[in-house]
Length: 151
Image (cartoon, rainbow, N blue to C red; front, side, top):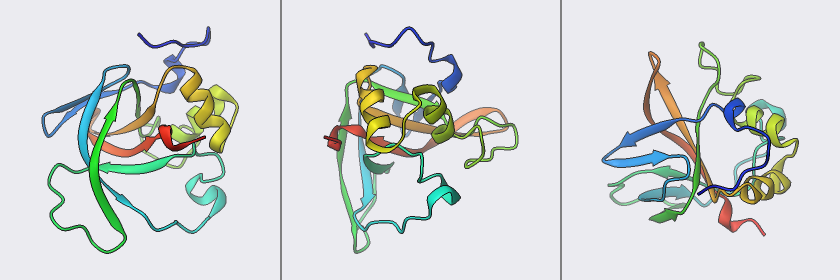
């Protein structure tokens, strides 16, 4: 069971997707193979909403990455209670607009960066998984944030 505040999670646009046989659903334990870029991204502020995004390790679901390129690592992630959200909240699919997953989390919890990650964890979640849609149907995972690395 997920412990949440009295504030509803409806405004976050919860999602669900099955990708490569793995079900990603809010509050449901999941285990999957990932790849992750270990090189720090340049900080571009609001351009990619880095100014409001949660802190954590950003992963990509990839069950068969082969030999990762230099600077990338692979592993297995296990989450007890992920928060699974639609990547974009607009019909036009703007992933960095006012209804992006980052903007919705920022609005809902009224925090950013590590403080946002801690608020999400306090609500009972250990990760954020975003889901991309095509023609109104969930297609695949996109950005996955492991919050457990935030202290």
